[in-house]
Image (cartoon, rainbow, N blue to C red; front, top):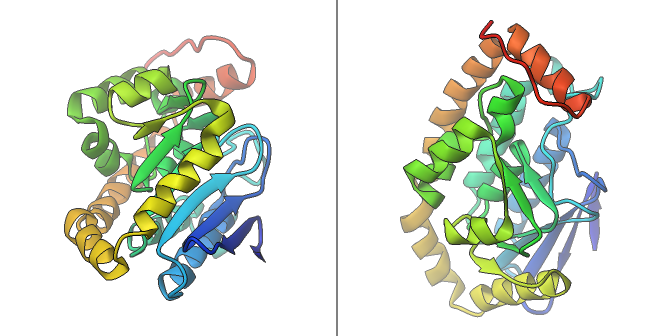
Length: 260
């Protein structure tokens, strides 16, 4: 097993590499974490032992997105805009050549949902929770969800989730296509590992070729999407509604938006 910052990488005999996030329990991300994942994906692309990746997280939740309540936030972005730095690293995930299966325990919220949608497939239990909660924060969605979410669940389901910011469980997520395998919580990791191993059992050159045909457009689409998303996030971050959304979330109450 190799440790790279807050992630570990372990390649098994089944040609599946487990890339695991170690920031329990919520596994909030920042620029450094997404960069570490992208670096790991790049290295695994070049490793002939790896034919599929299992993206996992230690702890209660897959990923609760960015921690807006943290003084550090997204990090320093190497001296630049941290949102732009984050999205630059996020786009790298979509340029990976190796199939990715995300195993989602607990919650995938906000940018955490965006991270889950960067994978080819998602495996979850009925108790899992998914939310594109940006509108409930007075904010624009990000992490390329403009490009990925409609492609996975269809435009109407994507609009429902983005406009309302509502939370759905694993069963509803499976019904709309957001989850590809729904399994009992106690079997979650084994089922996801088995799914990734099944992919890894196919001819690796053929799988990469098929993936490039089916998903090769996504990186450029996400690149265009995050440029728009970052602009709108910067604009809305200055509004009173955004401040209210953050306060309401911290105080665990319903927000009272005014449209300013």
